[in-house]
Image 1: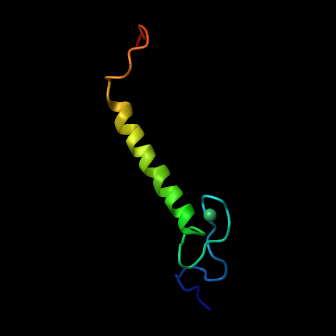
Image 2 (image 1 turned 45 degrees about the vertical axis):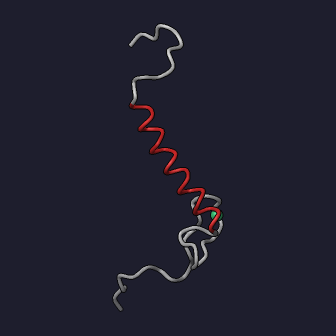
Image 3 (image 1 turned 30 degrees about the horizontal axis):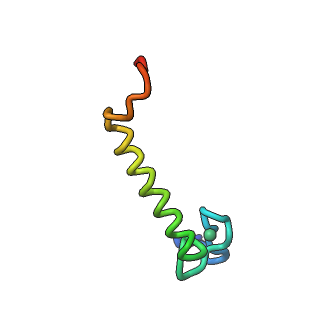
Length: 65
Ligand SMILES: [Zn+2]
């Protein structure tokens, strides 16, 4: 009795967004909405990093480094 190196089909993964059980059509999310949310979050983070790297921010006041 060796354990097959496959994913456990017992219970589906949980949606990382809302925690609901994922659906086969939107794994690992529960719905398209959550998938889009995650994607948007990821993209937003990427953009944030890119924007954060630009030193040309709004000059509020003499911000020392
Ligand atoms: Zn969800």
